[in-house]
Image (cartoon, rainbow, N blue to C red; front, side, top):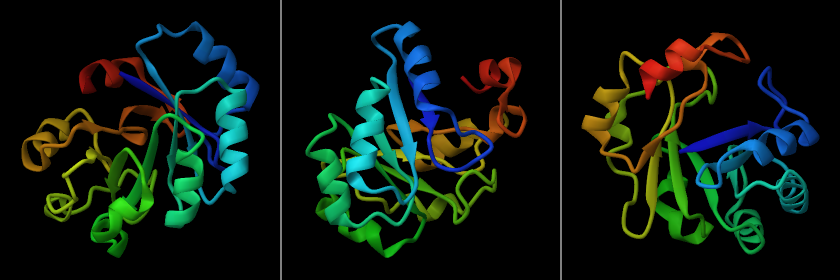
Length: 172
């Protein structure tokens, strides 16, 4: 349903031009998402637009103001929060379309206590569950949290930064 392109420093980081080339070849119904961490709003908008992506996912300590600045210029914004983060009680201030709830260390593959995600605000917001998901536990996470969607990275990798087609198929 969606494909994320990591622009934050990471073993998964992709160049903007490479992301654009991949995104152009995808079916129109696939949501393409740029993933950022603590990037300036203007830079998030510039990279997302240059790559021709449909959404931005903000995975750092972005303020409500910065998130709103991005949302004013990008059609869909996903704001990530660690489970139990105080910002979850102030989600409407951020203006994001989707709230992603994850563990304390994004991209680590560590599962967190999913009960902490059950309290994520739902009124007017879609919730994505992330953090340590893999083919063996995604169904349990969905049953417990009842999210709008799930986000996976390390749980379907052969090695850091390299997806495993078998794990991807099993996950889906």
